[in-house]
Amino acid sequence: MKKKTTINLPTYSQALPILVAVDCIIFGFIENQIKLLVFKREVEPYAGKWSLPGSFVDKKENISTAAKRILLELSNLENVFLEQMHSFGDIGRDTGDRVISVAYWSLIKPEEGKSQTDIVIANHITKWVDINPLPELVLDHTEMVKMALQKLSERAKFKPIGLELLPSEFTLPQLLKVYEAIQQRTIDDRNFRKKILKSKLLIQLDKKDKSSSRKGAYLYKFDYNKYKQLQNEGYLFEI
Amino acid sequence: MKKKTTINLPTYSQALPILVAVDCIIFGFIENQIKLLVFKREVEPYAGKWSLPGSFVDKKENISTAAKRILLELSNLENVFLEQMHSFGDIGRDTGDRVISVAYWSLIKPEEGKSQTDIVIANHITKWVDINPLPELVLDHTEMVKMALQKLSERAKFKPIGLELLPSEFTLPQLLKVYEAIQQRTIDDRNFRKKILKSKLLIQLDKKDKSSSRKGAYLYKFDYNKYKQLQNEGYLFEI
DNA sequence: GCAAAAGTGTTAGGCCTACACCCATGA
DNA sequence: TCATGGGTGTAGGCCTAACACTTTTGC
Image (cartoon, rainbow over all chains, first blue to last red; front, side, top):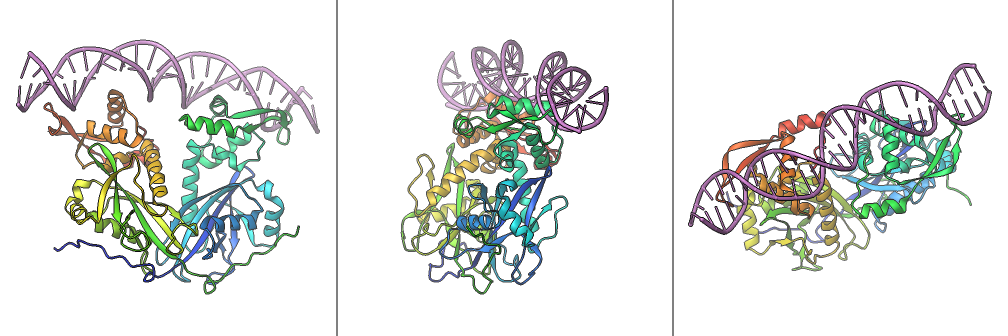
């Protein structure tokens, strides 16, 4: 069998462009559960079905800008956890046309963008849904969500990412519940406290949150600077 | 300030397609070092400069198929570690045109695809280069390699990925050197052995490799089935 | 017999897990 | 005073990191 010994690549002018979209997997922590923000699809095919919020990427727009745009429009939030996850590029994945979708995943604090989120929810453009079981979504969006849940679980094990789902001031019982929801298991609260507090990454405030008990739970905030510093020293956060 | 309460998205026919490319970060383990396979760019701009091997994605081709195609052409290897890493989509990243690049990273065993690799190397189409320091590459390819090295280091900590860089039969001193190269640190050989062997994931063979010492080192192979089984039980591999 | 790499064991300290009761408060 | 959720401590076992010498063999 003869082997090729050189490689022929198309030049820029010979290459065929492809439609590129961004889809966002947006998680929030509501009523002690991880919820997914889904969007009522407006374009055919499948107009009116639930999908991930997304958009085509404009030729004059960074992909990440498109993702931020979607998140801002739906939640009125900026500067939140938003990270590229994976690009989905099989030829048959979108029955409308050949579309490559770059999926982003995001963790938001639903209360902080509440007004905008409420507006789009009130207009039946979006809604929060349970992830267990996952709802039916168009195209390969269910697969995207599964991958994001997997990533969330993995990431939470070694990065303090659970905090992205809570307000900047939060209680330890709240944080525990976030981790339990992410990892889908119960976590011993004494050990959890010890582990978290040993890291010295949380600053205890002089305030208590009494919304869920008479005794009240101390509020904490996360020390991002200390975290960055420890990261540089090779510290490995682990739950 | 007035908020938008609905979202307008372009339909399929209104959206503008974009050029999509695949670039591959291919690592090999040669002379106890992690090496990167670079490719002499054939198209303008920067024709003749070193770049990552890549290609435009054909409109009728899966992205992953394009990545496999590149790897096969350069190394004659199939079924090796090849995973999507990240998509690079800023508008200015390619001075030739607006091109979105989906970067894949791959770990290969250079000996196993040797004939083809040697051919392309002999033709000065590709060469293996050190990663320390990184060579100058076109466009944002250096950034891609840095991200891949980061990913390699992270991944190696919890997955037995170092094995992808070694032949299917290997010695413990070889494996140690792979991990030292990946993590860029020295690792205590006694502790390394204990940790690796405790996992029972390596099967000791009745053969020795005497190529690097008079005494000879036992050859081992990895027990993939056992690994999968342990994974399902929640076992966490860690170096 | 010697050079060069392979192979081996112990100890001390830290970390994890498992586990059950008291505390503070508002109603 | 009681119901509810918040907060605390300890002991045993396991794992880790640090550490240096013996073995094998070809030359």
